[in-house]
Length: 375
Ligand SMILES: Cc1ncc(COP(=O)(O)O)c(C=O)c1O
Image 1: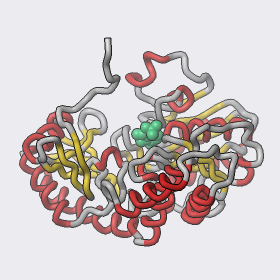
Image 2: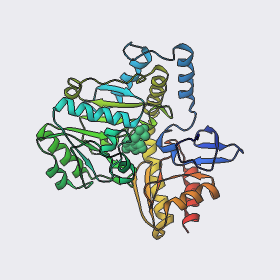
Image 3: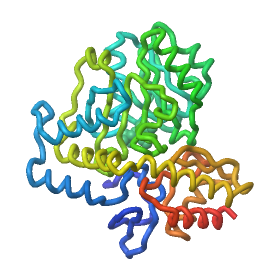
Image 4: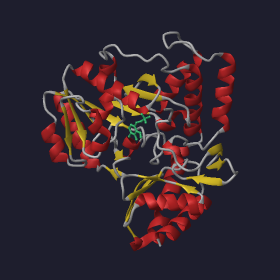
């Protein structure tokens, strides 16, 4: 038997350019799922492809134990845009690895066993990250997972305060849950979680793999509240489509992180892509554009979909529309009838994570198409 272990969609994509993808018959699709938030600058962005081509022609690989200019530049740019205090950078190849490292670092630095996560959380699919992921569908076939993980209801400050104790190594949290239904946390929940982790010396981990890199209108979504974690993870859009993840942490975590490494982590070609992506996001002030166009998108959705949907929520260009019917069917109709690619988040939420460079014209097209398929 031969087979590709992924559920495939009935569209064969051949090319990408900006906010568009093209299939093998030349049909154009507006990528409003942003390929799972992996292309904040749009497909095949020139700064990124040029940086990658240049690096490929100079040096494809040398292990991270040898300093290389492009890797140093990436470290500097990452620390420059990171929330204050998160100056230590560990680079890997994906989101789940970034969280895996965060959990390991927290256990090593605190010497404690327990991890607190939240109901409906999604933190990845390797064994450690999966142990902090909520959904039975993802966990069930692989159990038993890590012991000592407790789940509390999301955005419930009292439950968080009760769960965090002297045995707690870390709390891991998405500032807005992505896979779990686009659920934003209140500032009060973030602040309480910061307080109770500080009280017992546990590490607060923010998983900004979906919310980070300008998606919510700030470089990191924790900037909306001013709560700074001890560890912050990033991936998805960090290489504008190339595979890279990063774990940023405070000195006290980095001083005692144990022994952790990845052969391909920070490889020069991927580092070039990530450096170009981050510099472009920062220098062109793209998070501010995401904030502005995201407000326009949510306003238009609320105005035009009105009572036909249950809720429109999110921040910046991380938007969830809770529909009355089946979100999967709507997303299929959007693709097949209107050439618009979107995502779901559970059975009832249509999820939009477009490239951050979209304009009002694309927003209007998507809102009109959504009106048509929902109506
Ligand atoms: C919040 C969050 N954390 C972690 C992950 C895992 O990232 P990856 O698929 O790169 O392993 C994802 C992926 O969807 C995510 O949304």
